[in-house]
Length: 277
Image 1 (cartoon, rainbow, N blue to C red):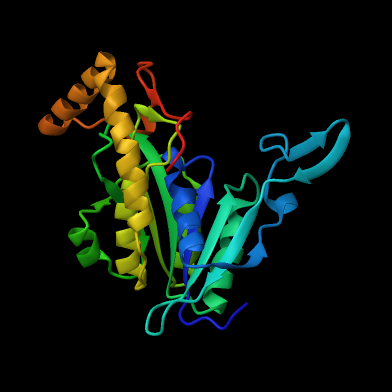
Image 2: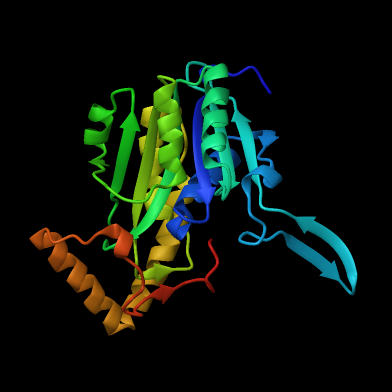
């Protein structure tokens, strides 16, 4: 572990809460772009059910080569002088011991002097791929001004919890500032990483956590994907009809509950065969 200065803890989970790969993708982008150094890992035996999230095996010509369990890794990032350093967790969402995981994570952040803990999430919603809607819940700290500048919507919600909220609760009990940021992704897109909203999320994170990050790669990837998306929409009038319906609901203020959103109409664009530039 390097000697870090006021390391902000940022967590991105794969699995549920990772629509269009925004949550884990953002965390991985931080590690890749800012040269994160691995300093720890999540114990798979304590955090995962293997019958739900099975280890991946590699077998070649009848010979067992490797077994890779579900995993989570922790990276340290040293930023330029005067900025907060970062600790970034990129992990499969735990399926076991949520309260213990959250307590240990908050205790660890507190011992290292983290000013805040931020979890990242993304959900499918009735939004357009050109929208940049981010909502948030926080405990401790005052993010009102930065949320207003980035048009972040405060969350009002009653229902089943994600692990993100348990982590926030563990922070609250330790008087540690916590925030959970949720990106809203179009339900009619599948099989891509939404670099467009990741760019907006990156800018929000930079201001909240006081560090610098170039988003040039995100912008280039999204511009290339957006050309492909627009071409496919032009060939699919059903998708265009779905988009018109979303525009009308936005205009009329008739938003649906994001928790009920999916591909129920069967009208989706799947870009899994397209490669990121």
